[in-house]
Length: 277
Image (cartoon, one colour):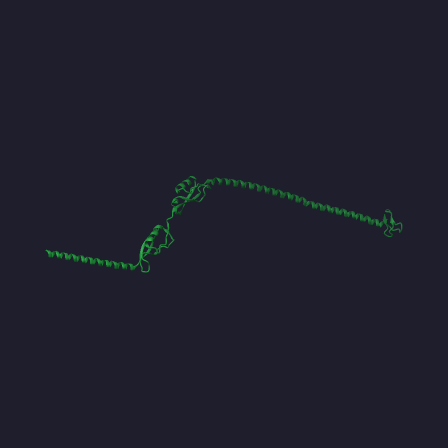
């Protein structure tokens, strides 16, 4: 159906003129044909454009797939390299560990309680080296005996490893007692009991009690070697000496009197004998 643009009357499609007003439809048909052609051209253009776009869009997909394939191959190569490297490192570590185990498979013997000579003989048998370290002890039973060893008994070590042996030696130190204020007899007894050697010297004084210790050369509670000598100073009171001197003078005067009386008696006896004769 063709609608007349002039009078709006419906007409047949094949009609060239309007039945009502006689309007010529050829121009309208040409316009429609042109519109159809334009639509067809536009469709073909849009189809060609979409095809080109699709082709362009497809092209990077091929590139992306090839890049992915390349990256996957590269990662596989890297993974294989790391696997082979780790296997090689494990093999090297196992070889080194086995050699280390062979070199460090010597068991350290227990030498504590043995004499130094016996202990060194046991270490020589085990292919181990040794060195001695001295340590003072007050226990006489530990003198010359191994009381410590640097590596525990039963532990593993390598050949010619050095084992330090601690050997006990007698402690020759003594502690100086405090004897100041004691009498000479008590002081010497205390020093002898402590094992301290001493020397006595006297000092004349009227302020201190006679025959008591007023000074000692080494301070009390100090450790010294038993060969070192401590000098103790003893007070000697002069008043006692003067008393002793006066007593001695009296005794001598009495002796002189006795001697004079005896001589007088002798002379008298001699005179009597002469008279009788």
